[in-house]
Amino acid sequence: MGFLSSLFGGNKDAESKKEKDFDILKYDGIRAQRIGKLTYAIKCFKEAIEIQEDLETMNHLATTYTQTNQMEEAKATVIRMTEIASEEPIHFLSLANICYMMEDYQGMDEACKKALSINDQIPVAYFLSAKASIGLGNGINAIAMLTKALMLKDDYAEAYLLRAEVLWK
Image 1 (cartoon, helix red, strand yellow):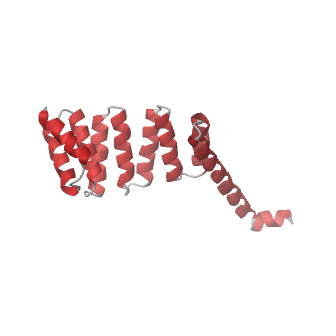
Image 2: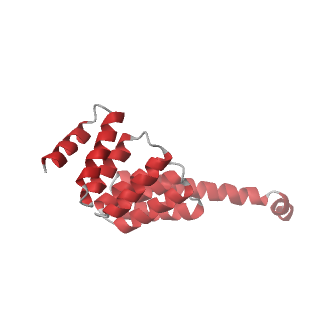
Image 3: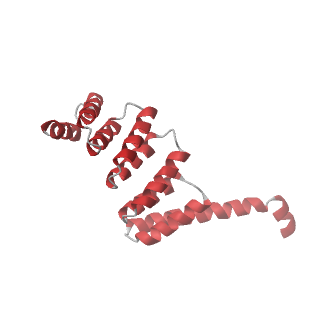
């Protein structure tokens, strides 16, 4: 009977086991991340991703890498996320934030441009683009980007403050 079930229905059991293993690893990683066991969380997330490339798990992995100051790994993970879901601007904004922490202003600017090419109605994308322009030494472009952000969100306090700082300089 075991032979017949493996022939006709055994594949479902293997898929079910993989799904169960994925869920266990993912949620163990989330619990470990919450209690500060970041090395174990990274291990769980990486093993879960080997089973299934899940964007939520990859996001947790990138966040944990950032928390442990493993910025290159975080950047590589988010780049993979942008490849999987290239129509989602949020992943490009995450990449821009990681590039900002790494002081990679050129990479940050490119990520912002990609996010804006997907959806040009995101004030944060203009704000991050302005920060990239400041890092690249282009104050005029920074003011233009901040003005666009303020046109979309007129109560964007951080954008007003940054624009005032750039104008002051």
